[in-house]
Every structure is written in structure tokens, then in C-alpha cells.
Amino acid sequence: MSLEIINLTKKFGPQTALNNINLQIGKNEIIGLLGPNGAGKSTLMKSITGVLAIEEGEIRFNGLDISANEIESKRTIGFLPENNPLYPEMYIKEYLSFVADLHKIPKQRIDEVIELVGLTPEKSKKIAQLSKGYKQRVGLAQAILHSPDLLILDEPTNGLDPNQIIEIRNVIREIGREKTVILSTHIMQEVEALCSRVILIHNGNIIQDSPVDEFKGKYNSLEEAFASYTSEPAATSVPVSAE
Ligand SMILES: Nc1ncnc2c1ncn2[C@@H]1O[C@H](COP(=O)(O)OP(=O)(O)OP(=O)(O)O)[C@@H](O)[C@H]1O
Image 1 (cartoon, protein in one colour):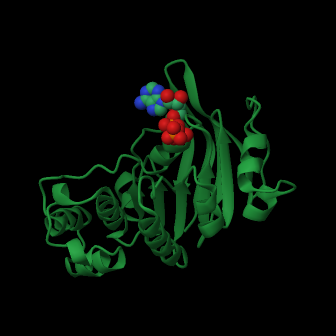
Image 2 (image 1 turned 90 degrees about the vertical axis):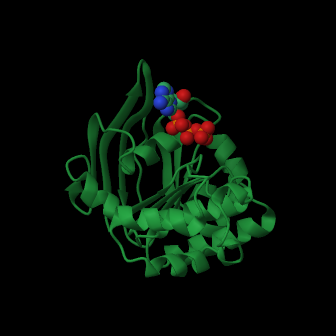
Image 3 (image 1 turned 45 degrees about the vertical axis):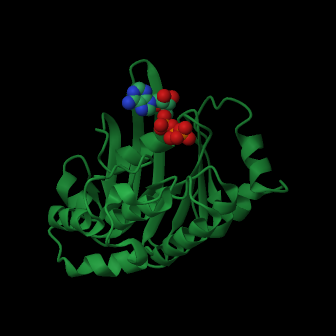
């Protein structure tokens, strides 16, 4: 698995949401994508997953330009978007069966994934009948159903209760042993619990890209480091080094 982002810029009208982003991401990493509200995290995730068209720059996934190889790329990328779009009128298995058809994968994988994300006790319900945490698990299930090499999760534990947060983190940690995971979060505890590397975006620029320990550096906590790095408006991209 290799993901290479080269000079990626995304503008919405006059606003630059991503400013000349360059990144190299390899195998078996769990990466925490951090940044204040409106920094550009979701825009970056949507660009990698092909939800947003790439207008300036390039994203290469396993050596292929994703814009020119959309279907090929989507076969091996899983995405849980921030608002977790689902079809509430569908039963869980019906929905996952629909997703399996989209990916042209065998249906026996569905039961395996239901078990993996902890949906077994609720598996006969309609999506509309599920609590928020269980809906989130359905979203995670659709993202991993086709066993993607790269999993992108936009605030995956947002709104979950503390027990569910622990369970979902365990699932993500398990996936991260074999696959690459990029997750956005505002919870620094989540970064400490899960991530090996932190990428910090501020005003559309990558201002930090380092192992978690280095990110923390001289500060007492990740919160303090985050606050310090993002207290000044970022004017330009700082050269970054990834271990
Ligand atoms: N479809 C769009 N049209 C116009 N502007 C947009 C659009 N999508 C995002 N933006 C703008 O781009 C900037 C980056 O937004 P983005 O959603 O990527 O931020 P984020 O880091 O994910 O924020 P949050 O932590 O609040 O989810 C914001 O200023 C946002 O208003």
C-alpha cells in the first residue's frame, strides 16, 4: 500500500481549503489527522477517496493516479464520512448486501464484518431503529466490507458513549495491524490510544507531520502541543518529514 499526495490544492471559490499538500503514507500505519474546525481535514479525506474531484495536484494510490483510475482505487479504499450516510429504511444485512454487490464481493463476508464491528446483537434491525453508536458501526462495516488496504475514517467515534468508543477503537487498532488507517479526530486521547503518526492541518497547510512523541515534544500534553501549533495562523507550508 502506498499513498502519495503531490502538490494538492483545493479551492472552493475564493477560499483555499487545501494549500499545496504533499504527503507520503505507507503500510500498517494508523495516522491521526488533526486540525481545528475548518482546517481542511474532511476536504483532504474526500480528495483521497474520490468524493471530491482533484483540480490541482495529484494523488497516487499504489502508484496509480486516482483521478484516472477511480474504480480501481475505490476497490481498495474504505471510507466512513463524517455524517455517516446510510439508508435508514434498510435492514442492516440488506444494506451490507447492497454494498457487497457494489464491490462485487461474496456475501459471506457480511457475517464476518457484523461480528467484527460488534453488530451481532442488533443485526436483525432496520438501520432507522439503531442507536447512534450502532449506526456508526454500520458505517464502519460498509467501510471495511471489501477489506480495503487503506481505511479513511472521518471522526469515527464522534457521539459514541465511552464503552462504544473503546470498542470501536479496538476494532480500528485491529484493522491497523494489517492495513493503513487515516482517521480525523478532535480527541487527543484517541490519538494517544491509536495513532503512530500525527498530521496536523491548519488553514489548509500541513504544519506538523511526525510520530506522536515528537508531536508532543516539549509540551505536557497533546492538547497543549495542538494549541501551541495552531495558535498562530499558518501562512505557509512547513517542510515535513515522515518516519
Ligand atoms: N463544498 C464546499 N463548499 C464551500 N466551502 C467548503 C466546502 N467544503 C468545505 N469547504 C470549506 O473548506 C474549509 C475546510 O473544510 P473541511 O470540512 O475540510 O474542514 P475540517 O478540517 O474537516 O473541519 P471540521 O473539524 O470542522 O470537520 C472550510 O473553510 C469549509 O467551509
